[in-house]
Length: 396
Image (tube, rainbow, N blue to C red; front, side):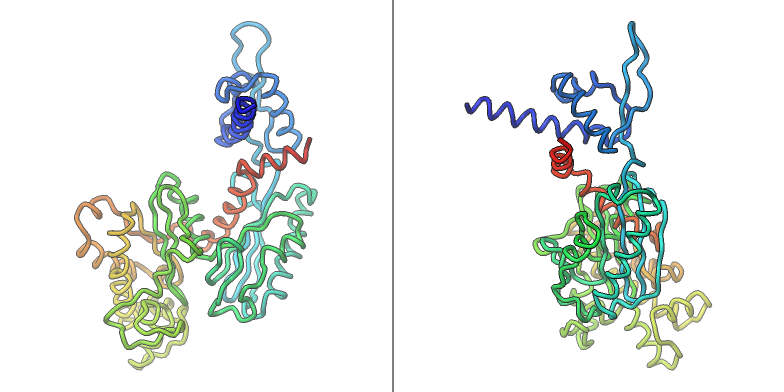
C-alpha cells in the first residue's frame, strides 16, 4: 500500500512538472514530455488535452518527421488567459490587463488619493478591472489579480498593517474584497516589493541577487536573493527607511522613532531642509524639478541624501551581497545626483570583493515597474503547480 501511495505521489508530481516545463515557451511533443516527466504517453496526452481546453497550452506546429506522421508540438499559450496588475500609490491608482508572459495589453489610471479609503480605491479597481476583462473577452479568462500598496503588508493575509499614509486601511481585507468582486485569487504586497519584481522582469531577468530602493515620500527596499523575492517572517524585509542613522539621531520620523533614514533622506526631509535654507519647495516632486532645473542647493541636498542612503546600503551589501542595486522613485529620477552620492559611500566603505562586480544604477523601468511587478505577482500564483492542479481538478 505504501508503494502504491508513493507511486501515486510521484505520478502527481510529474504531472505538475509537465506544465512547468512548458512554461518556458519551447515547443515539445507528447513523446518529449513523456520522456522528461516519466509519465505514460497516454497520461501525457490526457493532461495536455486538458491544458489546451483550459487555454493554458496550445499546439504550435509539428516536429520534424523521422519517419511516419509528424508529431504535434505544444507550448505555453501566453495569450489564452489574462491577469490584472494593480498599482495603488499615495495619489494615484493604475490597473493593467496582462497576458501570461507579462505583456501589458491595456491599462488605465486615475488621480485618486489612497487616503480616500479602501471602499473608494478598491471600488475603482473592481469597476475598471471588470471593464478591461470584458473588453478582452469573457470573465472566465481572468486567472488572478496582483496588487501593490504603499505601506506595510502582512504577507500571510495580504492585509496592510498600520500603514502611515493610508487612513482606514489598517488590517483591511484587501484580498477578500477584490476576490469577492472579481471572482479570482488576489495577491497583495507592498509597492517596493512589487517594483523589485517588475524591475527584475523588465531590466534584469538574468540577475538573481538584486536590491530595489525606492526614494520618494518614504524609503524602502525590495530584496531579491537567489532569484526569489525575500519578504521575511511577516513581510517587511527591506524596510530600510527605518534603519537608524547616527547623523540624524535628533530627527523625528513619522514612525515615532528618531534618527530613521527616512526622516533625513526621503523627499519630505530633503524639502524641509531646503526650506530651512530659504528655498521655496514643498514636495518631493518640487525637489526633483529644482534638481532638473540645475538649482545648486537642491542638487547638493539630493547628493547628500544619496550619501546617507549609501551608509545603509553598505550594510545591505555586506549582508546580502547583491549583484545590482537599483534606485527608483521621484528623487532617483531627478538626475544622477542621488545615485552619485550612494555610489560614493558604498564603493568607498564596502569590501572590494563585494563591489568588484556590483552595479548601482537608476531604475530602467521607471513608472512601469509597479504595474509590471503586480502582473508578475499574479502570474506566478496563477501558474504555480498548486493552482494548475486545482484548475485541472475543476476541469475534470
